[in-house]
Length: 373
Image (cartoon, rainbow, N blue to C red; front, side, top):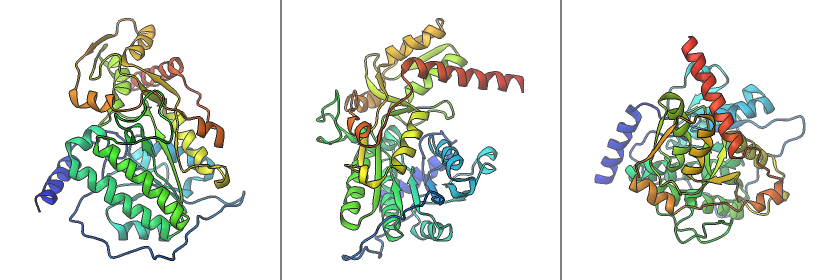
């Protein structure tokens, strides 16, 4: 039982620490056994279709992370406030709690999840709960429980109730033996982080459930996502968010990756729009179920130079984190997302100059508002 004791200790430590704002950081962990439930061998499941006047009922797990709140806002504008339910195991801030439906949801509790889906008549499920790359490497047993055991609960419930299921994947699903510049949709995947391994597992399991049971599974491999609305925490690409906060607060940024480390990146508005577009895409337009999406690729040095065009006094130093650098060196330098562009019309709007201008504008406005209050 030493692994389970390690998981329990790790869970308590993370759950007692301040929220980091990262992508759906965690769920409670308890002693887990094998579930007695099984999908029958002759099962056949299909997603619910919607008329133009009908709207899906959406559940977002891990909703208090980097992407959940923003996606809920976008979907509520489109489908109605009460049709989109955010969920997490953490207490939401007041602005999130009062902006629309919020519910407690533990992805390791199959019964709780099933009751939520049934009682709220859910037909779209967006699964954001996960431990990110650097955090996962520090807590492998916890990452395995959250990212893999939790995934199995989600897949079984989605199949049982005929849901349309979206699960994000990542640049971390590739490894050092993958082609890196560019990385196509289909190629060898041998990631070297538990986060990446769990995401490859999610891709393959989702595609298998689609093939075997007709589950309407959809997946996008996100690049590094940059947002002004959340603090960085746990991701190897988080330097690209941290630089903006440090530039405004202190005028000095310490980067933990080498200056020439090139990675694919995307502004959050493009990411959320891509997610909505692939969710709404007619099934017959999808030639695959897991797509790369991309907007731009840059290095820390290129990003710093662009920020310094607005803030020439910004000082940038490099203090390399060996763990994060090794992770970054195993990831794609650029994504080939031509299939997404051809199949369902994906097109990004933000390039590097627009990204920097937008991020600094948001954070400067927030700083002025805080000072005024």
